[in-house]
Length: 312
Image (cartoon, rainbow, N blue to C red; front, side):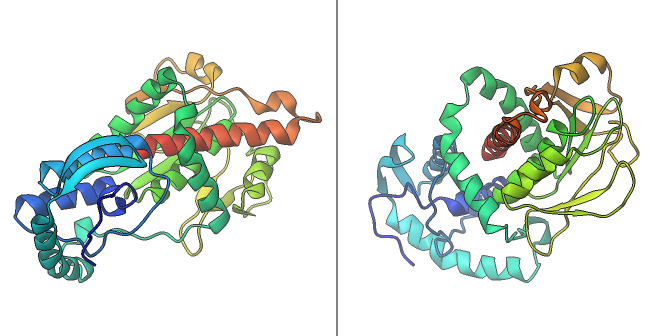
């Protein structure tokens, strides 16, 4: 496919993931390029489009200005794009033959309902306040740094009882990393006390299409939470934040409640600590608003973790 249009606002999927950006930078710097694998996508956030546009302009594929994710004004350097297509095909074949395994991308087939839910949320990033985005951007920057260092990204979501908000953070961060194709991301959760993964939080996830399987019959059961078919689940059960199941060094601690934030003045092995406190839906347990409030909190955490990974 050789692109012959004056509008590229929905053709950035090749450039929208951090790993691919790094690959394309290396390809462009070596004088190799390609267009064949650009495909049409919708709902990209303005910041994603802006970052991709900057890269395209840097290597002389296009010139012009961004107005919004749906409105670009620029000119296409077709000679460079044609060169890109001609030389990229051979490079892509080598990639699929594992000649460059460190860059190979794992394609995740996500549950359709969850994928559609995420797709709608990414259109709503402008509902997040600038103050909140500044906090979330710290997590994005941490993830980018670990990716640049070719190191695993370990994210530990922490709240008091490790029963609701921290599990939602763990699960949605994994979903967001798969949604945006960010590889080598490991998500965990923990608390200052051990209780159990709350059934109301589980039900909120099930309403969205998550396949959740209880694997033990103890008072603190282990659950396997699947957002895709045939891939490893998020393993969820209540534990303290320094449980042996969690990383002991080189991780980000993301505090999802003020109580845990105040009662964890020091966390050993942490590289960055970010406070992203959320209201506790527990306050509405056994009330007419119970499901509504759990869905609301689930949605907020999903929205913000998707925003975090959109900036990677």
